[in-house]
Image (cartoon, rainbow, N blue to C red):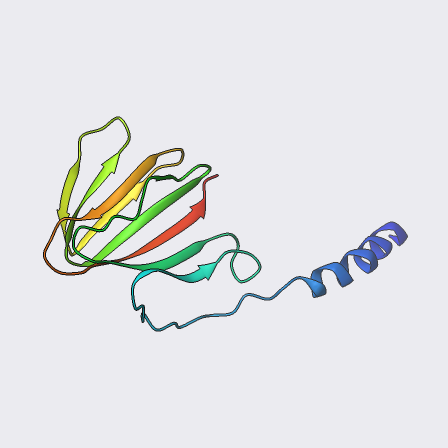
Length: 125
């Protein structure tokens, strides 16, 4: 019993010092490019998110999900997603794309208007 009391006494301060995560409501205002919404720890358990606006012909650039999985929620416009080693995938909003871990990819605006989407990246377990 004494060991349990000691353990609780030692761990209690560490738990109380852990950052608290709050409910967030964020406006989706972005003048262009990539505008982060969530930046991971300590505000979240590891999830990152952002709002992207690409002008016609622009692309986000090749990058990899590495140890994360990613989802894209296309809000407006049309584009093309390229996944390394796979054929291009055209899409038009509204659309949802899931990208598994360790996937190199790029997104390009192929339309005449802005392409807007939200990305959510989370550690894959």
